[in-house]
Length: 316
Image (cartoon, rainbow, N blue to C red; front, side):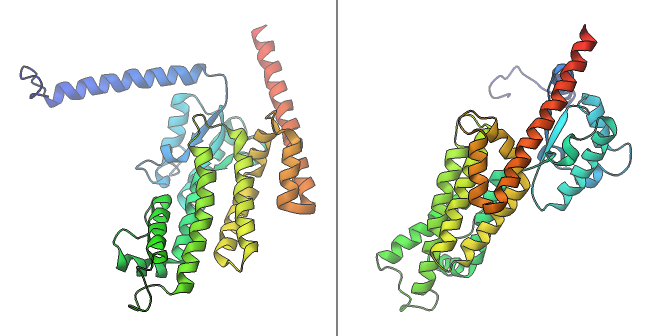
């Protein structure tokens, strides 16, 4: 700052005071907005756990989380909790949130819609799981090029593997040269995984690169993803594809109700698409899964009708 303005002589106390004042003003604005907000809120576990272990929130009755919810006045406005699947910390945290909300207003539909699992996280974990199953082959490829490795960004890993495949197709990586080069069978396995991941990337790109994310299209893309994995597992004896399909099916079972409601309320999908998707995924059991969606929509409508009636009576 002094380089830009030699006359500016900041000190820690002044900067700290200004910073505290800005934080107070922004916090007051957020609290005012949430206090007047007449709707439901989805709470994110990532925000609550940022640099804080879950136990900080669940230590006792006067835990930080409860104080935070009370301070911002959103205890009765939380409808869902976004979390990461198979994370012990999140499980502890969501139970703490749910129990606190249950005491204040109750959780909608007995917790059927409360837990929301991240679709993008499921895709990333599924693809990374496939890469780890061929990690031995990838280690051989890293011997040929330092760029080939399993990275946290799965589409980058896939791009590196495809570059290695191009070299192999051009005859530049022959297993006859050294034992550290993958065999033709191993190259074929890498090629198969890359083909599946390419298709997954197209689905992911269509969904997450959209300008506006809306919940109504998630079921469509989840069904599209499942069809890709199902076809890949049928085409050959592909244990990797079958493992990815199982992961997708687990996500389907956990999130179908919420995604089905969103799709059913979309005029371009409606219940017809929900019924179609259920029949393709669950076969004969699909009708009961689709009926569950319609039943929940009716219950939610009844709840909101009652809530709206109470609000009208209070204002009249």
